[in-house]
Amino acid sequence: MKTIVIAGGTDGIGKALAATRLSGGDTVVVIGRNEVKGKEFLDSAQARGAGARAFFVRADLSLLAENERAVTAVKAQFPTLDALVLCARHYRSARTETTDGLEENFALFYLSRYLFGHALADSLAAAEQGVVVNVAGPGAGLGLVRFGDLELRRGYHGGAALGQGGKLNDLLGVSFAERYGERGIRYVLIHPGVTATSFSGVYDQETRRQIAAMRAYAKPVESALPPIVAAVDSPPAQPLSAFVEGRRIRVDDESFDRDAARRLEAATERILLEHRGQTGVLPRN
Ligand SMILES: NC(=O)c1ccc[n+]([C@@H]2O[C@H](COP(=O)([O-])OP(=O)(O)OC[C@H]3O[C@@H](n4cnc5c(N)ncnc54)[C@H](OP(=O)(O)O)[C@@H]3O)[C@@H](O)[C@H]2O)c1
Image (cartoon, rainbow, N blue to C red; front, side, top):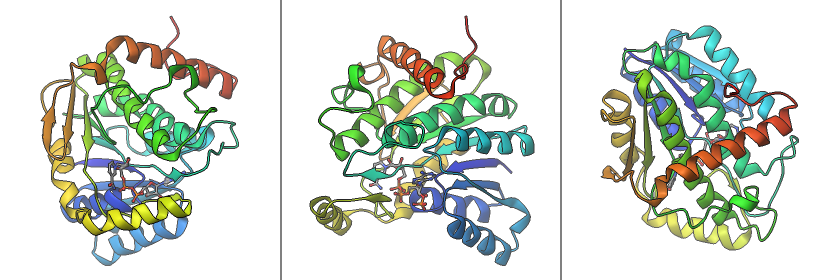
């Protein structure tokens, strides 16, 4: 039986995965900002006789201190982790900043995933086969990445912000695999395809209409699970792999450019240094 952490596991794909893995006998730690949904997860686990294997850590993952508090809590209780599944995201039609002064999509969809992966690497390396499953939107090039304006101060659009976040996660996968591949941790990027979930977000009228239209053809949430479950149970042997709706894609094209990945890692460490008033998360050379 495995121990699985699901960041953004209170709704959508993360929630469905939490329920499935709990039913299968795993220990599941759900991380989310919503206390009520967290309690629902714990109550339903209790009702199914799995209460001792269900955990909820409340944290707003768009905030640096909350990420640090959440990973500290997880590390203290679970020195060995089989899988870290990253599902948290929140669409914003209008550009907003967190109380840390960071653009919200950048903070939640990318930086939180960066912090979680690095902070939990030792726990994942301690497992027989540790894996990070980053559910985002791999592939399709780096056209949406604005290296000179990662926090999208100019010409913000919610869709472009989410799109850029997906590409930043591809590059995160490249850096992570380079750094931890030798320690046996696998990194799997997964595009689930259009799936009828909660579509967590704050939408303008036009985008709300588009989301409603998307729901009509989106697949049910259970259909998004098989590739994620496969990645948790038997990830590919390579340190980095990527899948779009279950189909494996190449990780040696422009989307996964090593120089761009190093550039992003350096920029991320600078941003963390600036916003935390202390070192970033990586050891300094
Ligand atoms: N659904 C799709 O069509 C689709 C397509 C391509 C890629 N994806 C990717 O698949 C992953 C899962 O998507 P989904 O559609 O299942 O998501 P979802 O239903 O919108 O759920 C997002 C999850 O993130 C949590 N979250 C949002 N803001 C948070 C915050 N500040 N702190 C902590 N948790 C927060 C939500 O919590 P609350 O319960 O509090 O809202 C919820 O649990 C995402 O990374 C997404 O980019 C989805």
